[in-house]
View 1 (cartoon, rainbow, N blue to C red):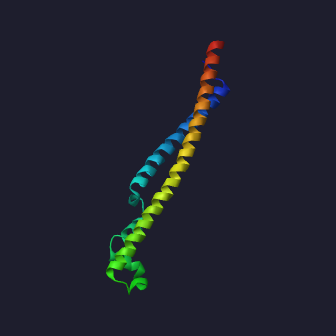
View 2: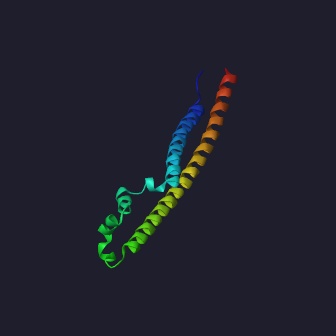
View 3: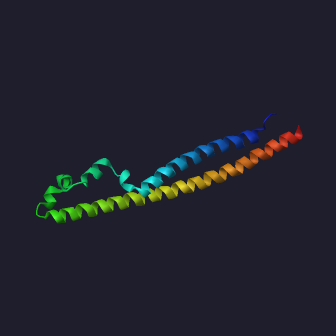
Amino acid sequence: MKKSGLEIYALAVCYTAIIAITACLSLGIWSGVKIAVPSISIDSYQYWRFQSNENYLRDNAEDMSALSSPEITRRRTEEYRLAVNRERRDTFQNLVQQLIVLLMSSAVFLIHWRLARKMRRKAEADS
């Protein structure tokens, strides 16, 4: 059975939409992991900095030379908490964008899939 140009177009759009849907789903899964465990995606150097007062002081020694060890620990853990919250928020924004693309790609797929089926039924009826 010969396919019409409109059916080929609709199937090509469906194929492209499936690629976009697949990409959104895989990125969405990664975003879900990053929201659940934001420390997994913090920059390695930044993560290393927050693991001990010694590492933290390497970058901030001149600013903190007069502070006590408990105060340094408090600042380090607070800065780490803020970095984790920033990572979670940024990832949530990305997830919302991915969901929008997923919704739009799904709508485009459904519209064109129905069009392709309609054109195939029409071709079958004509033959």
